[in-house]
Image 1 (cartoon, rainbow, N blue to C red):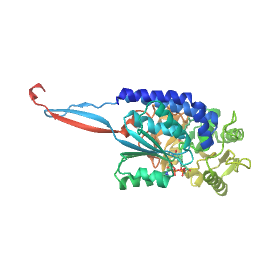
Image 2: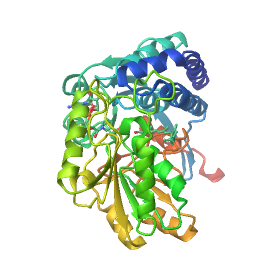
Image 3: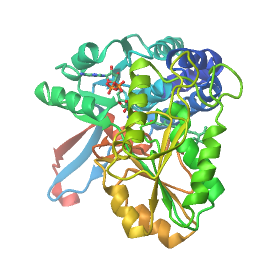
Image 4: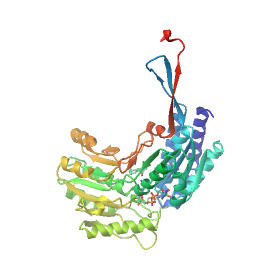
Length: 423
Ligand SMILES: NC(=O)c1ccc[n+]([C@@H]2O[C@H](COP(=O)([O-])OP(=O)(O)OC[C@H]3O[C@@H](n4cnc5c(N)ncnc54)[C@H](O)[C@@H]3O)[C@@H](O)[C@H]2O)c1
Ligand SMILES: CC1=C(/C=C/C(C)=C/C=C/C(C)=C/C=O)C(C)(C)CCC1
């Protein structure tokens, strides 16, 4: 099919998705437990926007004419890579579906996508809408299944030409190995993080408190880029801790279908238990529990919004990904120190910087070894902006123009010219 037809199908799909926002958002909340309002007002609109963004790319993908030495006409063809295998997690089922499927289809590939076992519903519904939008059968294949069986089969399949994975660093290592042991398919990985949120002494403390709160508590803390190490300058530390505690105590937790609820339950009992273990380890290692620290209520996988202060770099709550509603506040004295400490992590996904000083912002944004730096903002996820990790947070970039390369092969075509006198 022509690139223009591909583009129109993706646009029609985006319209259908928008029309069915209520149903898809409800599926997300049933599966994941996230607040319905969050899914309906933020995540589904972002998903729609991302598909429209990539629909715009479909007919603008082309190669180059290359000036080579000698009597040759050289061009590059940007061809689809073939069958794209994709494995996604449960924290943002529809949004992760879009980051994977949008660029793959725009570039003319076919897709086999495996959803997370906890959250299979919305992608199946979306596949039905793609069919309605006119996508031919067999182009987009949604597989529900478990990781070690369905996921591993995809990663090691000899006829899957590319693998894109989002999930934990441990599983990322497994799929990379499976890909290398089978057909050496290229792999992009979007893995875990322990992102630093740095509040400098000149920051607007109230704004920093609010954004550091959403940076860690958004989506029940289940974000790969959660700002899970809040570094605060010693001059504003006491004020910040007091206000962060008050904000967490104010967070509305409860039935995710209710209006005004900010925090629903964790995705499942494994995550719920793991987070409570992390909280216990924080208490045992000597961090000060400012608020929270236990389950919320006696039913369901709800956890109290939890804030620790006096957190030290060697505590496991400052090193390991918790993936829950737990804020860890650390004190720092100067820039060189916070740069070293923020970079002292095996992860390198994102960072937030809060300052009005241009020099401080420039220094920190260049010194931090992370894939995204947000300055006086956090969690801005525009479809056009690349996202991905340094170090063990992964490799490759998704979104924006960068993701197109993940789904294209470059073929160099060199033609001998018959009449060199015209060169
Ligand atoms: N980076 C992220 O966005 C993200 C998302 C979810 C979880 N996590 C992290 O991972 C931790 C564990 O969560 P999880 O167990 O659901 O993550 P996971 O990495 O095990 O799961 C992610 C995806 O990989 C699949 N998978 C699992 N084992 C596989 C295998 N052997 N081969 C191929 N595919 C496989 C899963 O079925 C799922 O679709 C969380 O606590 C959190 O720290 C990170
Ligand atoms: C709505 C909203 C926000 C949006 C957050 C988003 C959209 C986060 C997306 C995270 C993703 C995609 C993580 C991947 O692991 C903020 C900034 C928290 C502020 C409060 C309101």
